[in-house]
Amino acid sequence: MTEAQKTIHQSISVKGNGLHTGQTGTLTFHPAPVDHGIKFRRVDLESKPIIEANIDFVVSTARGTTLGKDNVLIYTIEHVLAALTGLGIDNVLIDVDVEEIPIMDGSSRLFINALKEAGIKEMDADKDYLVITETIVHEIPSKKIKMIIEPADYFSIDVEIDYETEVLGYQNAQLNHLDDFEKEIAPCRTFVFLHELEFLLLNNLIKGGDLSNAIVFMNRQVSQEELDRLAMVFNKPTVKVKENGILNNLQLHFENEPARHKLLDVIGDLTLLGKPIKGKITAYRPGHQTNTEFARIIKDTLKV
Image 1 (cartoon, rainbow, N blue to C red):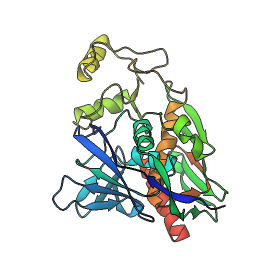
Image 2: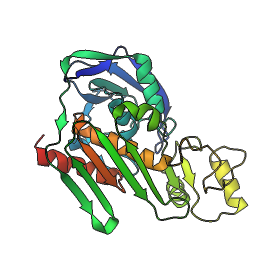
Image 3: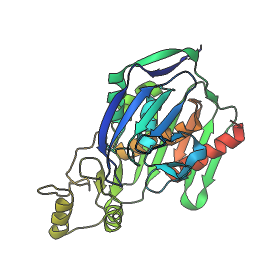
């Protein structure tokens, strides 16, 4: 049975801060024609250059996935791409007036909400699926990383993570059908360990973060003085460590929210293949670098 391509009924905007740059920007989704695909347009630049959401334009995976073309960059694209794939949207033009996509609440939820408010409509053309015809494996044994995609009649994904720490060890997350993405995966927020957070703050690399858009895992004992400093950095009156080893800035949506967020990232990064996937993915300890390397391997293997 064929399925129609989808776009949105009308334009809609969201506004927020970039996690790493701190830039306040507006992201505007526009309807796009059949076979347009997903494209970003930097409307803050005079020529309004367009960058396609394509694996060929990935230039960095440090702290997020970055696209670049002709010296024009767009940072942290993975959460918005995951939202589009999760809703089955094939064609959209995304205007952005800064270098970095707003982090919003650290998940795909607010992008999902905006796109649904704009309305999703079917188009007079069939979806062009990337049909997996053979098992493809990408493995880095030294890092205990392995990604597998194999033939299947529909898209599904199984993710396992293990940070081998007391506060965050082994977790598993599954998505058996994209229809479940909005409820089961979209609300899951990014996370960070205290030592990573301290490095980012020290190097001025997390200007737009606050304690509402990230789960902070405290992988060492901290003094009250350090907690007070974190509270001041994030403009909170106080913060404290909860029994499960995270800061009390938020409540987990799911016990395995970190694994679910890693699953969200895999979906967002593999959206860069440019077609919806029919295949089963299994990912062990994925990350943006691994995800995008895997996307390139899939593209080269299937010659798409």
